[in-house]
Image (cartoon, rainbow, N blue to C red; front, side):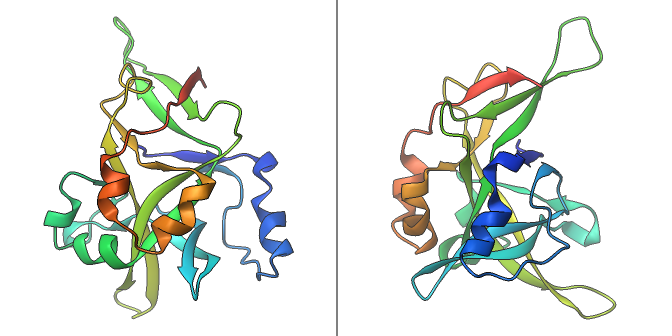
Length: 196
């Protein structure tokens, strides 16, 4: 679930960051289709201020294979790989929407759909981050994963899971480590599906 998202140029994230006086890292993808292992800006809260930082999407997979780009909210606190990060190192990823694929009876190829919040133009995906030492060079990298939950009625016809979605008003509260249950148990925002 949520193996791809996108940032439309209209989200104007690059200009928003420049207006806040933040340095721009040219290795970051500021818009376009975002894949696991891409470096994108994610928001953290530092000294009470929302800060955009470049991070790689996906924790390193087991035994150095692949990446873990999603975490189930139902079990994340039970897994050593996720627990401390979810409690202490949260992120919010600004997106214009996310993609999902749906099987078409009688066809091998699946239809791709884009999911957005109607009339808003952007949404935030809740997640968390950790730092890792890349081998063999020993470089430290910061990586994030997206938190997912059971699909609501608007998402269920397309997939059984969906990302935990935050509104702009909820971002700082989420990043600041407020009551986790509040975000994990509340109903998810209704999303609008469009064939991509």
